[in-house]
Length: 625
Image 1: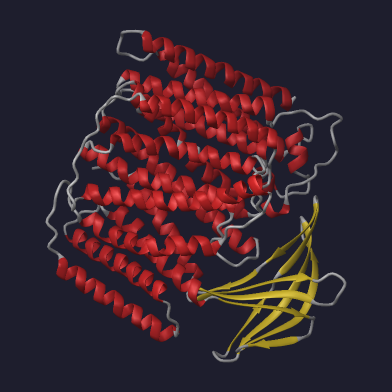
Image 2: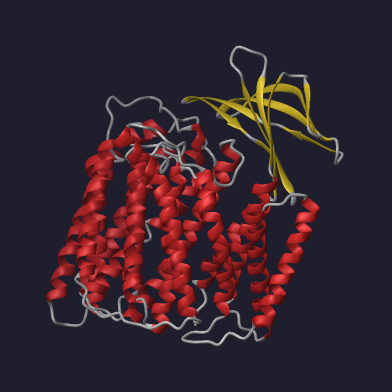
């Protein structure tokens, strides 16, 4: 029943999408300036059908309809309802349906809010967006149908991967998808702007809010995923340069550059070609990341669904998208000559863009290079944190300085005379850095330069905010939040990196071991039965002999039946200063447990700063100027 209804909705969506493409093309050939009402009705029916199909899949998961293969493979009657719902997008088929839903929602809303713009621009955007939607719908129906029926109907499901049964990871994919799938709308708008020969300022105004929305959700998705990896995977860090993490970071660099460049195009009508390129490559990089993850080319703990056949479809679709988009772009004949003064907001924004492109290239090469070495030389290599840290860290310093000065610079041209203020802020940053060095007793030239640069950005942003608040000018508040948040983020990342401590030991129940000034005592074990799993809980007493504090930490080993899996859950004690982080795992055939104890300074401030950075763009969507 649900299988038939779901397929009817999907095939109905394909029929409506084809109709939108046909009528949009026909409407383009007509000379009247009005867009046909039939396209409005069709867009409404399209969004109704596709959302209904997604709600139907949620219904199937909630009520454990194991007649659907996707439900059978990714759910179980014993699962809590929250994780039954999360299971909808915790697999390839459901996540692809979510992907199509987001594309349709963005298409409908963009068409609705830009209905009164130049007719050809609106129609071309709708046309191209629906060609993309059609491509993914065909992929969904032919290769990844979430409503595929299984016979005979099983009485029980296989269950959801236990590592996915977590609140943070339940909301991580929808947030991330709103980010990089949302970028499809300004890809389509960029193609439409070229084909309709639209004015650059109008194009910038029409996509600006969509860039900010997608950037905000992409940022939130990355942050939530990072928090999940921190406490769930037992590695104890906020970022691991894992290939799948990198696949989400690459579009974020493009979006960040685009969010700044679109301001130049809107204000000065400069950088039109560059904004078009960024709009194109943002969505291309999103689809590229999807290809790398879904094809099985990248191996990662984050990769939960891969299939070479699916990867081939995405690769062909991606190749066609790149080919046709750049053919359309290079046929563009609008001249984009401009002159930038050395000290102007436009120049600083362009500088920001080139920093973003450098970071993007570094991460892309580090992610892709191991694939080429394996194909060409049959040699497996790993590109990890040392590579990224050594290449990116030095370039962070001038980037932070530019972030501090840039917002204060005026459009067109400015004679910068505020050198006394800059020197004072720089000296104050050096003094604070010296106090940090004196208190924490560690020195590294590069780290100290990044700390000084971060402090420079934070203090400079605070000064500008105080000045603006006196004039009751709050339009720059989003910029202040994002830039200050990024400065705080860099500051505490460096402090965390330099002053983290890790202890690795094998220990028996009842035993105590002392390392440096830390005593770790394994008090006892207890076993409990939970709704969804059995759990072995360790009780560890951590005593700091130097600072004279004592904490109890309770890591877990969870034993799931459906599917049969062991997971190792970290125990974390958090305060404003540091996290105490402990994981345990049993050593087969012995009474010993492997214990990893870590002291992670300022973790709470890292998460706070990351959310503060993302909040700026969200706030900007509500402010108009």
